[in-house]
Length: 150
Image (cartoon, rainbow, N blue to C red):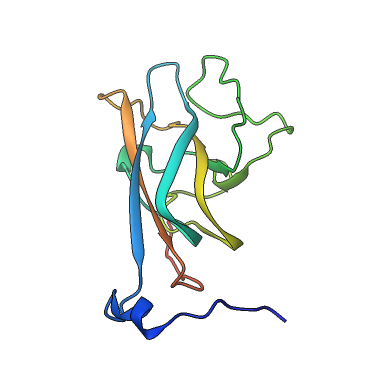
């Protein structure tokens, strides 16, 4: 049987009974021949639930993968990830199979983690700024999400 950690009323009252939602924004390099490889994502506290909540619209169909260790993926001067079959990451989306936007993609772990890495591409558009933002939510207060993706 799964054991849940006990919280005291003081623990919850510090947040006045509201869910704890932590948002982290990371910047993905997106030059003409660059993809974002092993971009560190750090939360202030460990969480079990993570969801991509926002990504620059022109790069919305990016392949976004997470890993708990650096993958040292070789981009071979491409702007789109072409997996080799040997990667040890968890894909949240990809242009060919995800039918669009990465927002709303989520993952829940049994054990809370505080740090992970993102590898992401930008197949639709090379942003003028040479990079684009992705915002990720971390929490322990969400069990599941229904999210519309087009």
